[in-house]
Every structure is written in structure tokens, then in C-alpha cells.
Length: 240
Image 1 (cartoon, rainbow, N blue to C red):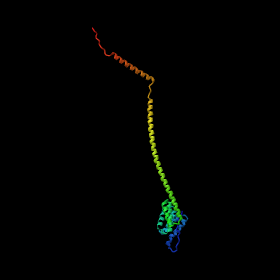
Image 2: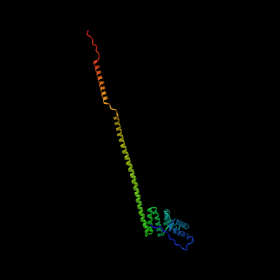
Image 3: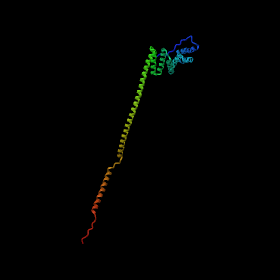
Image 4: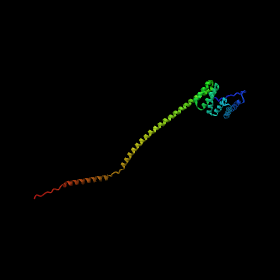
């Protein structure tokens, strides 16, 4: 990936002292930038902009120092503003290249791809931007595949959850049926047990009871016969 580009400033003898101040800070900032002291370079670039807030080199290099400090949002804002105002195609292509890099770092691959395409329209020969474009396309495909996989995994989890819930419901119903069946079987066993626990009559007691019944029946029959034999008494008068 292309490193962030810096404007090379050429001193012009005919400029005034006040106009030289921004360039002085830019030069100092560039030295610090090359030493990878990006925070110190940022300070110098901001000082150059206090002298001239519209100074393109100061804004561009400030955005570069912010990018190196991973402040992608603010760098993106400055690059975007510069890209809208720049008319020179070569310079605009460089700005758009760096703007695309901020989108790449933020994983906003759709915007990244569009920005690299704009850069190539301004400079079709920039192979580094073309490489970054293909890389961004690859990362977008991976992102979409991951999103699709996550969506599928979430759907599978939901389907499994619903299936488990249904299976649990069926299991509960089956358990209830089994419990009812067990309760019925237990009731039957309890009833049989109660019947088995009833005291059984001994054989001798049964014979005595049967004999008593026979005696009672015999007495009853004798009493009936006796009553029939006596009947109604009839008085017989003698024949005098």
C-alpha cells in the first residue's frame, strides 16, 4: 500500500516574510514526519495553518500526520474537503488515494472502492491505486461472506432453538402420558394389594358357619312342619 504522500515545498525568493512563515512550519513538520514523530509534525502543520488556513500543503500534510496516528475520521474529513476543491488531476488523484486509504482502515469497503475508482479516473496509470482497489474488492467479498455466514449461523441457531422447544414440548407430553399410565398402574396395584390384604376365612370357620346355617335351616323346617300338623283345633261333639 502506498505510503502517505507529502508535498515538496520549493522556496520562492520573491515571497514576503509573512508568506514564508507557513512554509517554514511545513519544512519543520516534514522533517519530524520523516523521523516518524507524527504528533510533533502535526503541531508544526497546524501552526502553518494559523498563518494561512487555506494553505493546501498544510492541510494535506496535517491529514497525513493524523492518518499515521490512526485518527482516520479527522484525516478523512480533511482529505474529502481537499478533494472537492482540487482541480489539478495529478494532485487530486493523490488526495483521493489517501482518502481511499482512510475508508480502507475503517473497513468501509464500498466507499473505499468508489474513492479508488475516482483516483484512477484522474490518474489511470497509478498502479498502486489499482492494486489497492483490487485489495479492497477482496476485503469486501470476505466481509460479505462473513456477514452471510453470521446470518446463516443466526438462522440455524433460531431453527435449532425452535426445534428444541418443539421437541421439549413433545417430550413433556410423552412424559405426562407415561406418568398418567404409571399412576393408573399404581392405582390398580394398590387396589389389588388391598384386596389381598383382606383377612381370609379359615376352613374350620367356614365349616362351622356352614353347619350353623344347616342347623338353623333344619330348625326352621321343623317349626314349619309342626305348625302345619297342629293346624286349627276342631271340637267334636259326642253323639249322645
